[in-house]
Image (cartoon, rainbow, N blue to C red):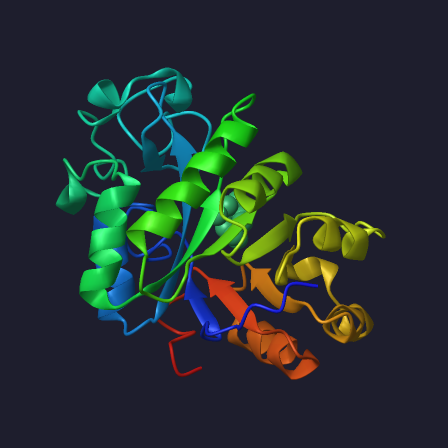
Length: 246
Ligand code: G3P
Ligand code: CA
């Protein structure tokens, strides 16, 4: 099992600034830092010309003024989009950020990072490899970013490209073979939808030597219960009420 140290805090700001700023933008990262958080989670994919940038959905429609599959466009086109105006007028013209810009902003705020590799269909291995190599370079000499993905293939490619970086397998449904999957990917953690957990499952995962990050927990009472069970990190949108000292 991966014995990488776990230097990460208990609370992780989801998509940068939760729901207080347009997700996965530099503005969202600034908001996460302003609330005093020590770590942010964000979603990374590849443009057609293999630039790593932040976006959650496969398509541009929900969180920008563009449309269609984001990964089919070159960065030159993606860079022109407004990824903030959909959220509020105050964020109009906020651009989609490149991972390089995000790394610099994290360094500026002394934020640790959970990079979720969110590949466009068919680009799983390429995205995993590119994200891992970029993470190694961009965070050199700093706390390594925690790489995670729902894609087994992406994490496998990340492991082959930069085996020294910590990896967490994301699960949105329960798999009885979670331990075997985590071992094959030499994971340090499981990143679970919190609804999948109970005290017994939490104990079993911890007993196996894995850390646990849960998403997306927005109710303080639920967050407290999960921490009592032994969960290591809570990924939350409610960065205002589930603060860094929670
Ligand atoms: O990484 C935890 C969480 O972000 C995974 O779900 O859909 O919000 O990317 P999603
Ligand atoms: Ca995510």
